[in-house]
Image (cartoon, rainbow, N blue to C red; front, side, top):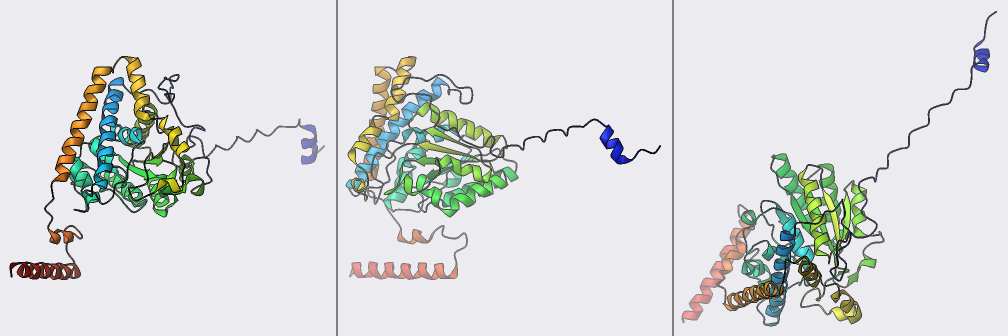
Length: 389
């Protein structure tokens, strides 16, 4: 008797197909925490330790406190210099000290930093001469310090262009086998610019060792965050490019340093870029030319004043027994001396050569640039002759 295939199938017990394995979650490892990482309460009380973000060494936190105090005094002095006509403009970063100093402490001196116009405090904390930092804002020079020597790009006024520069340099350094990380400072408004998205996408595709650090201070000049994005937070913008991201309480110095340290380690280990969003607040107007009362009220500012990052860290360090009245006073005296020296040096009238305007525009001056330089030279010579008559 011949058995048909149909009969065999009817006689065989029913076999179950193995369950289809669940598809991997493409966002796994990319999404930030649902709430900003915080290691200190606003009053300076430590929260339970975390395995993902271990607390930085207490010596590093004490140094962070010192730099934050000196940095704030520098910022106050620079703001005063604008009122005296010594600076053309100054964008204050008061209230963002934890972000400014934490970012600098998280990288090495051999790493590259790409600042915006608001990072004067970060640059002085990096050890750059404050007068050289303020040269751009004084209107004396394109950039007062040597970027190659300081591993610090010129302060960037156009929004987000530094994002592309950071990605390109980081990729180039990795391509040449150098152990270099680039850290790009970004404001919340800059995340709406095309260069931000192009830079993050390029860095992700080529696994460039770059950290994008967004200081979300709630306003892009007068435009509130609600008009910038509908995302749960700016940290989520990294997910679409395959970039791991995190958000942190930007007024918690301990958390800022812990999160940025991990982000830099991630990039340095060859895992590609990392995006960090710090929730902070700009206490002063956008610049000295801005009237912040037109778009925010005093109650909002006062609420953020209670979250002062310096007071927060001071309370914590005092409780740890590594900071006392004498140490606080000594650091305050250091800050005053720093501001006094800056004030004296900025009161000295700089010697500026008008022809230097044409230097460093191109590696090899174009014919048009040479012609323009000669026109200015001739005008200066004519002015000198008129003065001698």
